[in-house]
Length: 51
Image (cartoon, rainbow, N blue to C red):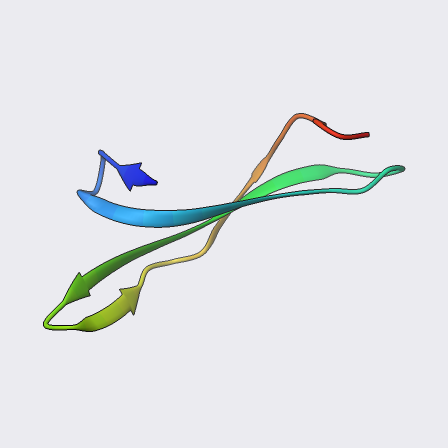
């Protein structure tokens, strides 16, 4: 996904437990000179989608 606030890309994963919390985890990254550079991992509260 594109992250307009930073100009980088990112991978977002949605995690949830049937009897517990739902969270989204975002790993921003940039690619420069053929090298992938990961940014700071971010976690956020999310809405349940499956359970």
